[in-house]
Length: 369
Image 1: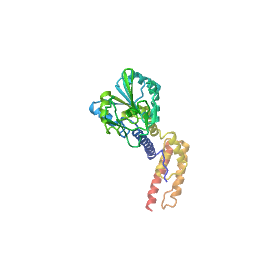
Image 2: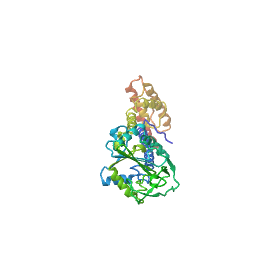
Image 3: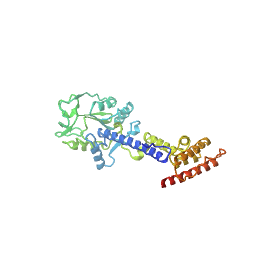
Image 4: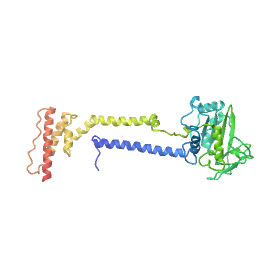
């Protein structure tokens, strides 16, 4: 198997290709992992049954910018000022103490908050927020749950998005264990609370407006009412560990751009300084080992980066190499030993050029025999 010399142009090109291949492979794996995370999230970008992309796109089709994607942590009150309603649906990351405080203040000042959980992990991630909002929940597994089949629940009275006599499809293994649940099964999946001037709506299981449920029973009617009630909804995407990014957003992200810039600089430096210390060491090693081509001898002898001692060695080996391989060539000229009276660069290059000329001539003569 041929060895790849990284000091040659082909070797450096191979190295660049290898680095780019590794980078593209890493990005492909990251993208696949991100897509799996998105599909398993109750996200405005997810088109899976768990996602809420239908509601998000529906809102924007009816009223431009009424559905928004919030893709950063809640770190200051100004992050929430433009949001009429915030939806935090089965978060995959925990709501921090600071975020919980800001969200509490947002609701107290008249904001609306929709939260949901579909498993123990997402409920735990909401725990600090629910504590701040003084919503003490008791949750239990329902005996009515069937895997893959939604549960139909009839509303007994008008309440926010729900109307008396209509049926709604819910999908959850966990339900809210409260006093009204045994009488009104809708309250097993839905509860609300006024906090200051605002409202908090909590849903157990997948939201009734999720992609897999919005078309069932009277869920689409309830979804229209929630759109009218909320006016605008900012879907929290940050706590799903991913965001929808353009190329410019990706480049602006230091965790992406800095490694990419570092690799690019390393490649540029490698190309610029490939003939310095590393390349000189390679040539000096090459000068002490008989080569196999005129190009190798030419590079090893004439190169200005070699020391005088290395050049003398290269000339000696080149002479011995020619004598050995062409001693049986008929009518071959006599190859004189290099005549170097001093270490002058011009003299050594002249002798090297003579040997290279003879080398080419003898190679041509050998092919004709």
